[in-house]
Length: 474
Image 1 (cartoon, rainbow, N blue to C red):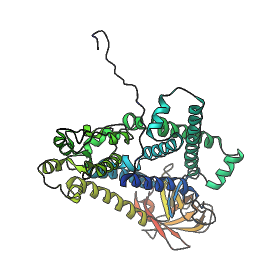
Image 2: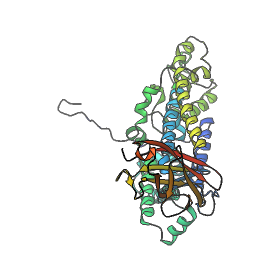
Image 3: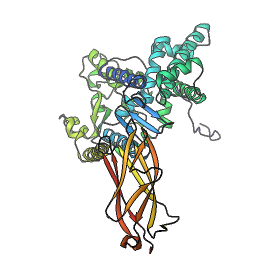
Image 4: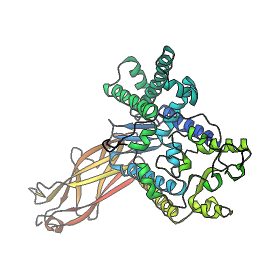
């Protein structure tokens, strides 16, 4: 570079065309892809009977009804802490698995990885394996190239449309929305969402691919804080493979290492990196380079494991001819045990909160304007706004009573009884008047504590909230 020529701060992208590979890790990725995509596409169509007045979709984010249904679990807006707890568990789970096994999330279950694998698979079906795709990329435009490209993008568009379609089905009844989408009667937001998700799926999974992981995702930069020398990750045993060379029968071949410099590990890598250059931010530890290298080692009569999952702390022992630590010694160590304990505490707390929550809830707010009212007979009355929440799938009669002071008695506005009906899966605002007789101590006392009780007369469930009565001297 001449002194007058400015250095380039950006290198143009070199397209990556991974070669087909078979082996244990590739089969594992196929199975994980099938399971995760199957769950994503099928889950909105599973039915779950909740009663005549509730949706029968097993998993539904009902934004209009402000409810989240997950099989037998029903989350209300004021119970968002369950969602927050699940997000905390997901974060701790990422920390745990990264600390123990490196970027296994990125390599096997990340949506970007799963959909990119699916797009590469369809590209390979249409355009051929790596060499054929490289030749097609470099050749000039012909009718054949145009046909293959249009076919590929058409299939990608169908996959992207199915992805966006599956997503919107989580927010409305899937069969009804599917019919409305076909007949053109669905809301405009459904079509808009599907169009956006179709474009982003094709762009990120089919076009950008590894660029999303390298430049857009923050996790490669965070992982360095999560990993240490005992973390199991993918590496190249250079003490066994170097010096590398291809001519095994040439003079001096006995001084060469096991690596024959075939570049098989590079050709199958979806990130386009060479694992032999050491740990790199771009590596997602998918294990495909292991399958490729093991296949080559079997053909040249060398033991597998030149590229493998291992911990850097084992390097010294292996260089000396010893054996690495057992895997469980790397997995069960103080850092991972702390993450496991935190993850378990949050999970147990969520399960405990889920099982102890009541199907009825109430909130009590005293009416402060005025604080009390003195009636014509000298008695003193306070007003309270009680919000009742019925989480059952049918209308329930709720009885409202007070406890704590025998001189106080309650009246419900709009009914001469203590009972008020609350519709299924809804809230009801009820005004309640609490009165202290004239001349009583409670009528003059600035503060008298008591408790509101609400009883579900159908099954006997009860809930309460403490409050206080303001006398005339308050």
